[in-house]
Length: 144
Image (cartoon, rainbow, N blue to C red; front, side, top):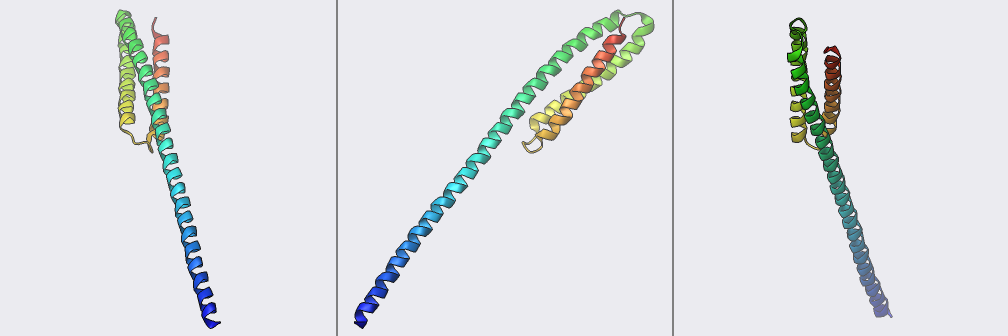
């Protein structure tokens, strides 16, 4: 009888070890699944950020190119202005060129910016483009 009890205890112990191993295997599979999903989420977020950054860069580049053309046309108008107003307009035009160069530098910085910091550069770039456009409009309104 005692042998049967020990035998039963033995089989219960073996069954417990097997069950524990299966539970451990399921936990590892669940953990692996969570880790995999987290990695996929991080990768998807990174891809989305890259797409947003690229789209913003293209838009900013297009706006800057359009402004450069407008400034070139404005330069011709300044050259055709009367001698008395040309000096003042030229000074404003030079300031506008400096702002344009600043926007170009920010665009270059944006290209080199990490994903974590590009949002800050984007805000700065938007402000600089807005200021450049306002300065252009102000100078344009002063040309006879």
